[in-house]
Image (cartoon, rainbow, N blue to C red; front, side, top):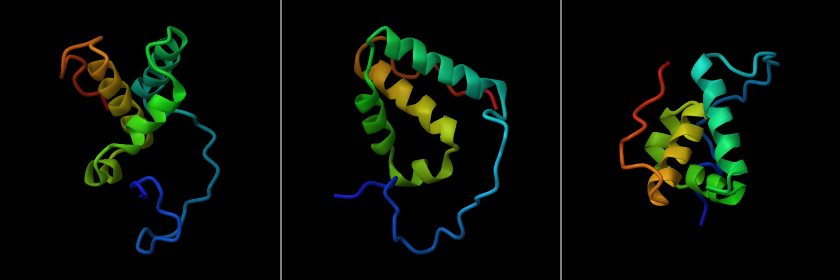
Length: 96
């Protein structure tokens, strides 16, 4: 069964933006999310497959309304809550 991230061949998403963007991050919080991901993965809190699965499990409407790093933050939060590292809602929302 395909998940929302697998849109290959799906119509209605418009053209793909292929312009080269030299900036890896467009807000400070995005870099912090990547740092959080790297630290938690290095500590064995979760692995890359669990992280990917958490991203792919985001409900379609939410997934399509999020930016790339908002999906990362959501997946990290989901995994930390699922594993009992934090209480639900403890991390809040990233500052844009």
